[in-house]
Length: 223
Image 1 (cartoon, helix red, strand yellow):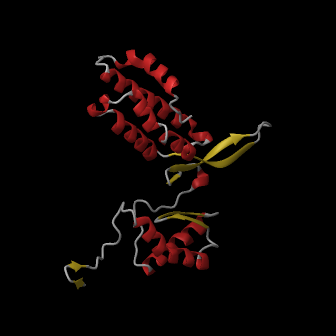
Image 2 (cartoon, rainbow, N blue to C red):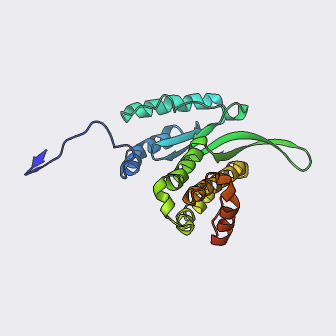
Image 3 (cartoon, rainbow, N blue to C red):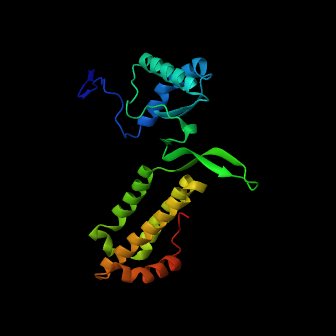
């Protein structure tokens, strides 16, 4: 369709991945999926959806198979297809594997009460992909040579708003070890940055000075 010098061309390729409006359009379109699931599928399991990413928790494998078949039929009706590599049935209670959803890994864990009674529950911790992304964000800030012109306070001011957000989202009982590793990674990156800023060949020699700056300026921690 054209009007004057402006033209609009129909696209059959869907919404642009990563676009600002993509999640909104996905929610609008998949609202019909929610309605059909509520009408025909809720007896199979509980659906949790965030934009175009969703999981269905079922009590039995038979229910899971029924849910999978129903979802395929609904998607065909919506002229959509399931991603073959990301769509799978996971036997969570066998303890063999878990699943990733919204940056968290979900799996079965074994625990004991104070009276030595064994029980099982599902626990969550941040995924390897989410951990790698946090490391990437920190590295992109501190590794480039152009970042050496900034003072420690400026990097501190950049990191401090981000760290509480990561902590609030990813902090779980079983995720503490991963968060502790990320705290160490941030400190290590700051030490490398500081050593290069001071033109020192051995970055570990600057560790004590950076630890002092961290306390002095109140750099927040994930754990």
